[in-house]
Length: 195
Image 1 (cartoon, rainbow, N blue to C red):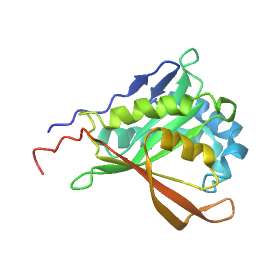
Image 2: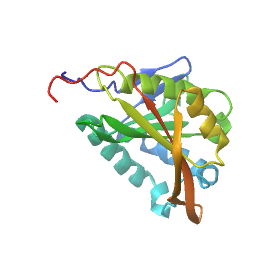
Image 3: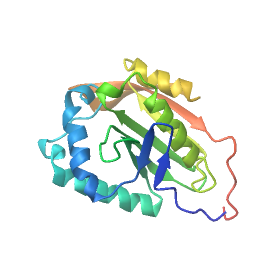
Image 4: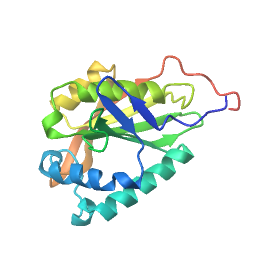
């Protein structure tokens, strides 16, 4: 099966999911800075330089390269009425083909946007793209801390199944933290002709 590239933009009822360009670096840096405290219990430690526009421009550039190569797909989330304001991200990384056809899912949402169903809306659309014939992934894996009830709930609502507990999985918030591992498989996966 010949894969065509993933769509660079996806529109939902309330959101624009866009691969973006380096011109989005200021908005991404602002998103990271204003959510620094909110993300700290769930994300690995980051250097001060991470919060600069230059670092985010580099990150966007690397993300676009991975997107073009089919190695990863990051979408920045913006309200439809404010397409230059970043309020979240959805990232499918570590894309592996062959007998695996799998990736790892990561996501983040602006603290004031929590509790409105926006991440469910974004993930539903983005997962549909990853399971489409354009990208044709078979499995998406996600990891979340057991204390992160909100993250676990959105994954469960999307149909992810918890497959186990990974002890001391990531160094976060000053210690090695356990994570639930959850996965979703594509019931419409099309076997590539060239395996």
